[in-house]
Amino acid sequence: MRRWGAWRPFPVAGCALSGGAAAALAWAGAAPLPVVAALLALLGLGTGLFMQIVVVVAQDAGGARRAGAVTAGLAFVRETGVTVGAAVLGALVARAAGGSYAPVFATAAACFAAGLACALALPDQRLESES
Image: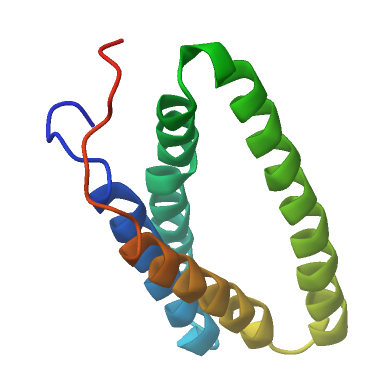
């Protein structure tokens, strides 16, 4: 992040990449395994672009004295989201067992689209701390 200065492009690019990959997986149907593997790799790469950036930016915004509390709060919210998300996507997978997994990836694509909208609304600024 420090090399490019601003942090905002990372969550925007990550959500766009993950959302595009999830949408492609929703419409892929019976695609060959290498295509599915490449799309899953893109989904993971996009997710990696924004997951840690959010933590670093929140820690920077909270300051050094509150870094632990900010990290704990983010971990709690993230785990709550993972729990709810796993339940919803698990229900979709169970419903689609033996059929199409398109609803699972379409739901994931919609979540990434919402994340992209939030990322686009973020202020375009630099990190404050020097560490």
